[in-house]
Structures are given as C-alpha cells and as structure tokens.
Image 1 (cartoon, rainbow, N blue to C red):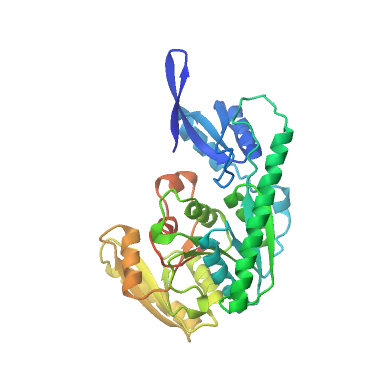
Image 2 (cartoon, helix red, strand yellow):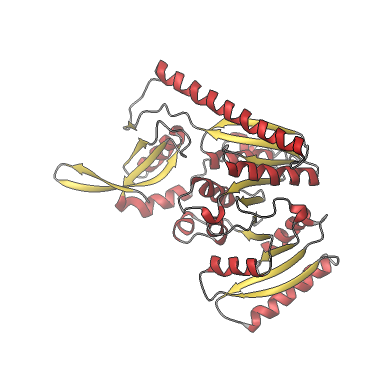
Length: 381
C-alpha cells in the first residue's frame, strides 16, 4: 500500500493510498469516508498516460486505515441501477483486450472456445481520459477546458486505431486458419478495466471471460495480471486466464486437467460448470488436494469425491492426488502440473473480504504471477 508524508505545520502525517478509482467513484468514496469521520483527499495519477489503471487515488491518514478498509468492504460500486435489471445471459465469450501480445493469446483461446461452444465473441477495451486535475480538495469544482476535450478525443482516437489494428491481426489469423471464424463485435468503454469487465459481466452474463496474462514472466505489480486477479475476485462468470507462455491455447487440445478441491460444497457446482466446458473433449481429470502433510482422512475424503464425480460422469477418467505442500503452495502446485503434464488448473473461488485479498492472496491470484499453466476460476455459488 503506497505511503507518503504530508507536512502539516511542525508535524509530519503519513498518508496512505486506500483506493484507486475513476474521478467520479473516487469522489463518492471520499464523501462516504468523510461522513464516517475519516478525512481524505483525492489525488490524480499519471495524467499523461491513460494506460495505467485509475485516474485518481483516495488517500487517508495511516491511523484511519483499519476503519476505512471496513467501510470500503461494504461499498459496491458495481451495484448501480442497470445491474438491478435481470441479467441477459448471452451465449458470448468476453475477451478483455489491452492491445498487447497477451491480448492475441487470449483471442486465440477465446475464439476457439466460442467456436466449440457455439458462442459469439465480444472484444472489450476500457480506456481512461486523463483530463482531471492532479489534486481536488473537498468542495472544489473544476471546469473542463478545451485542451482537455482535445486530449480526450486524442485518447479516444488512439484507442480506436489500436482496436482496428488488433482486428486486422485477428482477421489475418482467421485467414491463415490459426483462429476459427466466429461472429464477433468490439466495444470501447471509459473506466477502470476491472470495474468495467465486472460490470459488463453482471449485466450481460457471458458464458465465460478469457484474459491473457504474462505468466511466469510477470511481476507482482504487473497491470495485466492484477486486472485479471481483480476480475477473478469480483466476477461470478467463469474466468480463463491464459499465460503468454501457455503451450496449448485451445480447450479442445487439452488432455489433462487438475481440479483443486478443499472439500467445500460449492466445489460440486463448480465441477459441473467446468464439465460444461469440457464435455465434448476426452480429458483426464485429477482431483487434487494440497496439504502440508499426509493425512489419511484427506485421502478418504478425496476417494469419496472421486466416486461421486465418477457416478455423475461415468465416461470421464478421474484420479485423485494428494499434493504434499512441503514448500510454497504455488510452487508445489506448479511442480505437480509440470510433472503430470497438466494442461489447465481449475478451482472454485469464494468471495473474500478486502483484508484477505490484501494480506493473504488466494491461490488463483498467486498462480497468475507464477505459472505458465492456464487457469479456470469458477466463483462459488
């Protein structure tokens, strides 16, 4: 969490960045915090480069951080009026793109998935208009200048050109036969990528979301990976995360899948959802449980889960495996994947509060930055 110091007379007061949002949402959060007695300021970041997520930071005193996090956890910016409408539930694969090489990886996987499932494709890009002032005190207003409007139009025009360039690359690959021909449309929206993706998913209800990531080459602060992680945390739609280094970029070519289980009831529904994607393909599924040491009871439970799924899917080859976590969890899982030629890791993820997401990142988020194995994350129902 970013910190700085602010001189106030003879005392130095530490400020921390508690959230990054578009200007409007930052201002709303600032108002909410003040109503709860927590002084805050909003401050612009990267007003030149709109690619960096977020227009403005919300900053508070470090001593107010625990209480502020509790308040933020109760604020759902995605719950606007349009999301109260009934979900449309389209047969659509949503592919968020940022015009990088990872976007092409996601497109390759997503177009194949759409072709196999009889879905259309939506290419979505969220962009920022960096015309907000660098710092806006409470109660102040600002006027959009002509130069700011020009800058907004420049950003919009540049984004349209980049989308057109991506379309040309996709069309070239379709012509070459590496990407199947499926109906697709594009959409450009203004805002934070993770917020816009989650909002779109809640409103439209696509069949799946496919996102490209750096994989093993990623840094913890990598923007692509972090956006994917936020979407996994906040979205009920199944999310495929496809690393740049993934050897197989089509679900139909995958032969071995790991389904992680922690013996939770939600995992049975998640397994069914996974099988809706895998049914057409002859795959082998490992039911895997990760534990720090061998436990006979874990093996008994795994055997029971295997029997239940074998009864439901008699045509499916299923084995169970106990993964001994004698090292860092993601390292143990990655080694297991490499040893057993695993093509994809699937898991059910529950909604976790903001404290858990910050101080104890889940396995899906950690694997995004550590592995070149594709992930399928299914939010617990």
